[in-house]
Length: 415
Image (cartoon, rainbow, N blue to C red):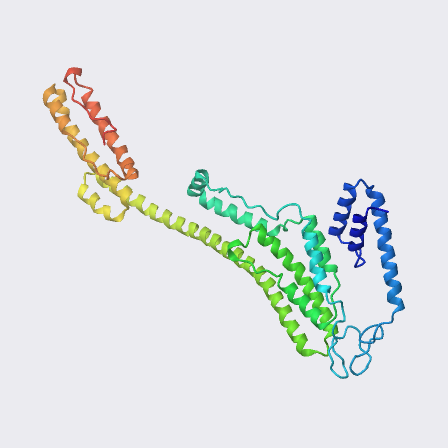
């Protein structure tokens, strides 16, 4: 009907009575290359499969199976009737082997690989570019308390969202959950061991990553399959307590891994919540402590100002040990301003007597002594306010003299 090459390929593909997706793709590709109508070709393939299945069924019905747990379901050793799904004879203890086709488990994983091969996109593409720039650094530097809350909230939302699931994942899930569990001891153990190996343990470092969420979703699916196998083993191995105990160990280990993964998520979230609550409480407490301390400093500073107004400078200086550096600079500046103001007031008679030369000399001699260190801008800014007040008072007297007699007054920025 077709060329010798295509007929040969069809014969090889249908040798086992089944046509896999990969075999079908190869045949269709070859048929298309030879200009064969694909709809007609598909109809011919289905007819060939039907004939092959029909012939195989006829041959199977014609040749009776042996009584070794076949249709008759008898023990091959003692001839006793075997119970359904049994892996061991209840009368003589003989283990039943090769109940299922030897390649049942292999065939399952081959089908799983075939479905995975149809995936068109990578699971999660990792970006090689770093998202950390100067803008991010500045944001964290100045707004880190707010960003901590935002990031924590984002993590909680991310945990609540399901993993990304493609059509390929849905097909694989359906295959895993609906594939029949074998009955023989060897196949049950093999199927269970391979299924348990698919359970992944999460790392604390990547606990909230999309990849970990994806693996945890598959952990749940494989655990369901393991529970299916365990249910079948419960029926099949009720007389084989030793093997069943081994199966229970594997099942329990798989359960523990998935439970531990969930616990890790809650541990990290719990730790994050504790840290955030601790941060909030610490801010509240430290804020109250700072308020109380500032109130104390303000009270001491007010007392010092009253003493300065009364010219009790030594008493005011005694209060310096009770305040912080900022308030110390403030008090010292006000003491110096008060002393210099007294000296400026003493120059008033010279102005009245128009002794401008002497007044000019005295004004130039009156200089502010710097209090704050040059390296501390905050302390210097506090002192500068009082220094400006001194310069203004000095200028007020200087401006009352004739312009050609005036002294050179320093700038308010010369501190």
